[in-house]
Image (cartoon, rainbow, N blue to C red; front, side, top):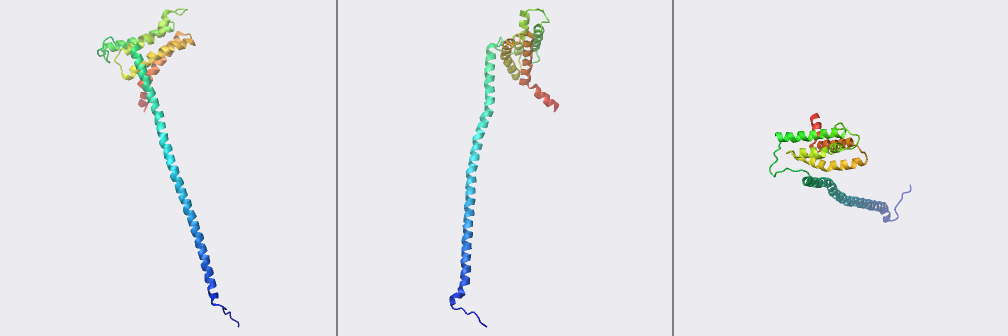
Length: 221
């Protein structure tokens, strides 16, 4: 029986050296893969770190713009109130004395001014619709009826010691009604239409400034 006899002592080390070489190669490959993964993770972290400040900067930049848009509307309304109040205080009738207004709520003078204001509005409607002193031609009576809210109703109500919101509504109406009375006849030559538009504007302005609809919603709740 023949047996294999190693011809050289080096033959005993061929197999171990082969396995050790493969192990070294696999370790190198795994090290390369780990380095690639670490580099990829570091790149992702850097990308996120760069993108987050951009988003924060965009958020910081957007907030002042929104605040500017939100603050522009109240500022415009405030300026409009100042102009209306100054104009109405200049041209609208004022109290004859510099003392405190005696027409406070609950007094007879307050009631007289209030009744006078709404009575002139109703009388103006009767004249505008040609129910009193009827005429087939435009006359002074129908013209006074068309302007009755501006000439009598608003001054009578402003003569009272009314609230701030009501005084502000009357100031707006003192400037709005002349515009309606001049613009509407350019399209519709009707005294009744002009008086109706003035009346709608009157109660619409009161509803807005005094919050009539808001009170109704609260009562329903």
